[in-house]
Image (cartoon, rainbow, N blue to C red):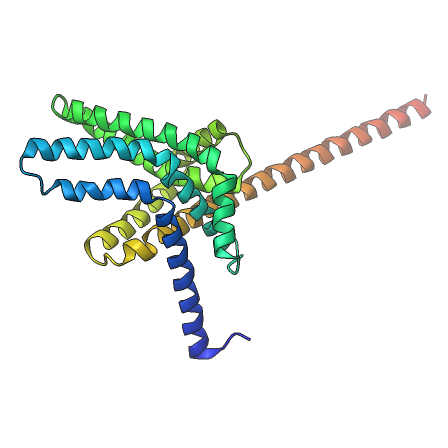
Length: 266
């Protein structure tokens, strides 16, 4: 029996701490190759010359881009699969089983989506670097596109664990939702950006234990609000169509009655 009162509150808080930390650690464990290569970026800062440092950074970024679709994308999808359960009220699901089921079932689609997103992000970064030296205004446009891709990526993960769609439909709908719901997109970016900022610059212990899982939870929570509202709109449209159909059928019945009445009086 779950304790009540103050002890019950501490018990529930400790449960959530355990849930977030376990999923975050599983996410990191499944992304070790990507994270290991990313860690070399910090090692690169200790090289002798600036040219060697830049060369090491570029090499690390290329390797990270090559590894991302096969490591961190499937791991993040699995984390979102667990976050979906939490947001929809299934808070007591088995963590390991749910995580690895989401990892296995969505691996192929998350890998394909990861390849496409990685290519798009790489193109945007290269274009930003090129145009930054030539035309500053255009470079800011590429920053905006990068931000759009980043938020749409959260929606992609959310839709991947929620819908049964083809990969390109998921990609298209993720972008359309991001553009069509600017307030929600902005709030997702702000909340997730705030978690990253706090984790990197204030409480670094959040990175291995909570950062990823909290971001997944917040991103899916925001997406679920969009999903519920869309479902309500679809339901209202369906009811409206049914009412119109009933009105049309009623008018047809009245016309038939009038026609029968006229025929009987002839």
